[in-house]
Image 1: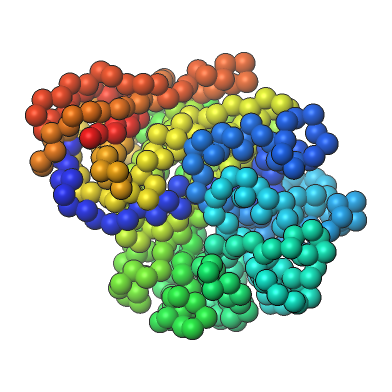
Image 2 (image 1 turned 90 degrees about the vertical axis):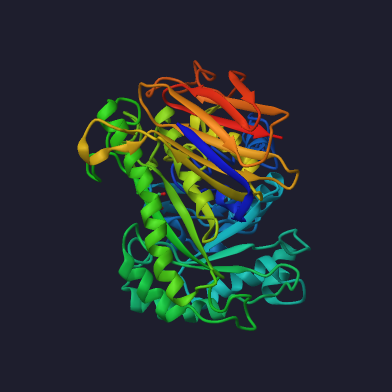
Length: 501
Ligand code: AHR
């Protein structure tokens, strides 16, 4: 099969935030996964795990969403500031019924993002919080003057304000965030967002409106109709800068989702085909957004996506802890390729979740840490961040699968060119068992140097604390070049990244 690349035809900017992540007060994501406290034996900087922070920096994490998720609409930020021994203790009723001691709060989140060098995405509480509470949170974090909230921040040891890059007004307001109708939420959104004041001219806050659950096109239509507005003095883009979209890949169904590691080829193709459905979701939601915003001023923010399986046997069902195999690597690979191809509308995406929850890039056990296959995909794709998408298409692709309903195209790709002129190609072979011979053809470029890496293994293979490097990115050299062409064979179940000059 042939991948044609028209490297001269630039199609749009790939916002780095498309490679974003999500961290919720859920299970062992924040506590143990990211934050262990200053007094822990696990090496940490101001309480943040050093091994995890280093790995995330190496992966080039661009943005981190926090504190939820469903937790966001039960979170009262003032419970999580000030001396730790005085912070309110509560039960995390949504996730596992465990004690939340609020030792990780606003100050710790901004410390973490500072260490990671990533943008910030705070999700506010509309479900059970007030307009005043949300407004004061923004004042606490971003106001650089004399005011009750800025003074409180200073009293807590932070003289200078931080930056909020993105602010989400409610989470899943159609579900755990208040079970609202689109009409009701849309009006609340207009009201709440009014009080997200822009205190920093140098760092305007982008406001994210709660968007649909998967294929709920009615939600998108109703909310866009009420909330979209032309640019307004308070915001670069009127009332909203983005509309969120949540979509999880569940191999079977919500009551019996399927095992993360014990599955067959039938389930492999079903899962991959459900991941590819992201493309249709983006096309159809974008078509509705285009009716209001044809110039694509606002972004579709896919701020929760990933695979959701049954929890690992013996773990707390409320902690959503799951293993991560080559199947997750390929679902991440195709999803990121889809986002790249829709970079005109998709401006941010956050995989759920960062550590120890759902499709995590990192798993921890005490002081041990492993990188999952999904981590390696984000690492291999990092060069797309901030690059320009270029035209590419495939000829001679095969349709493969076990069940008629879940057939997929064998190979998927996306291509970008960086500011340094290097062309980035990421290719997925979705076959569970067959290698794919591939020839890449450029319009003009005659490659003079290529650096490539590969992630491959059996469909169920994964890393464990005993075998942490079973699956890892390896240098790939088995390609030939001739004039404008590069040829190689992509093994079954593989991801290949090429950097071409
Ligand atoms: O990521 C887990 C949960 O999934 C989030 O809290 C919620 O927003 C979604 O339903």
